[in-house]
Image 1 (tube, one colour):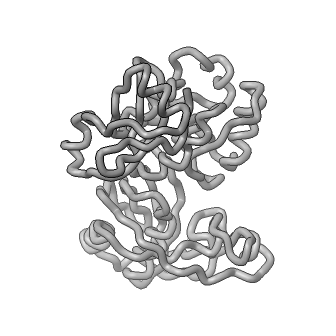
Image 2 (cartoon, one colour):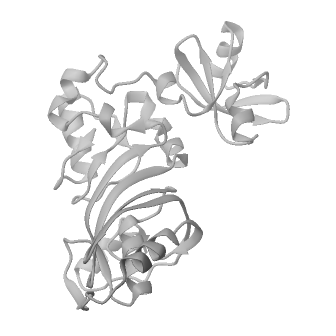
Length: 288
């Protein structure tokens, strides 16, 4: 789905449920209401695979305003500080943004979906009890500054799951000593999935079962290591039994990784998501 501005991710799921006539729909990663762009939806039994999509990096186009900090770190929040930025040097600003690259610890915003004592952090924040959340490890894989037109900075960034782009804007503002907040955010990519292939909510029903962004489970896991199984192996996996590890797709060699989930497929059908343990392939979730 290409989520429009003003819609929560939960509301997007509700729209999809109504359009497709099923309750078994879930998304693979929240977008803030003010943000737009790519939201992956898993339908039917494939909702059980949603957790694996958290492994994929996410790419955003963003704009932040320097000199104004808000309590939500985006333009929907209450202004908590203002500083004149006319004296800032554009090249210095760009360097600070580029310095976001790499692994670090980020403190999630108080206005976030993180849980604190069983409640969402944003609910506590909205009643005047903003929690101080523990920093979590994040990775900024790529960042590109598109334009610095003070007080605005436009940039593109690819990050690990769990990274708050508005948190990056907050940190840039604080490093510069002037504060900052996001004014726009659009998610353009999740792993190999592009927003150009997504549909607006009102078109979901028309696209169900056709091309228009809808993928079969095996196609949706094209980014995952793969093991082609024969009928007898598929039957064993369906019944919870391990099969020989066998030969995986070249993605294993390309990634240099010998861990993580594996899609067991037969023809164009997803049989199971499995893990390799020694010389065995053990099913974790069975689909066919």
